[in-house]
Image (tube, rainbow, N blue to C red):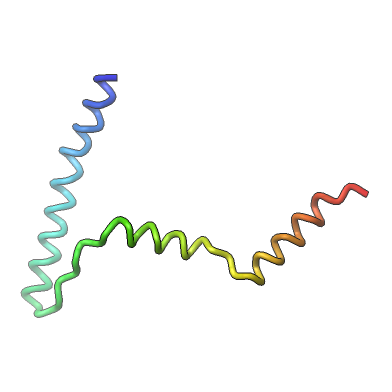
Length: 75
């Protein structure tokens, strides 16, 4: 268990500085070219966007229901 936690922390110590460097480099280039800075996205917003993308429209939902009924028919 301790090895597992140590591996996760080690990966975080490796990945987070690379992400921060890339974010800083991107922000620096945007400042230099007078482009607006892009804020760090909120995880809650990201989850909500993913849920909205996964929602099926009513028409697609009806087609899926009919397809499932067709496949389950045993007669």
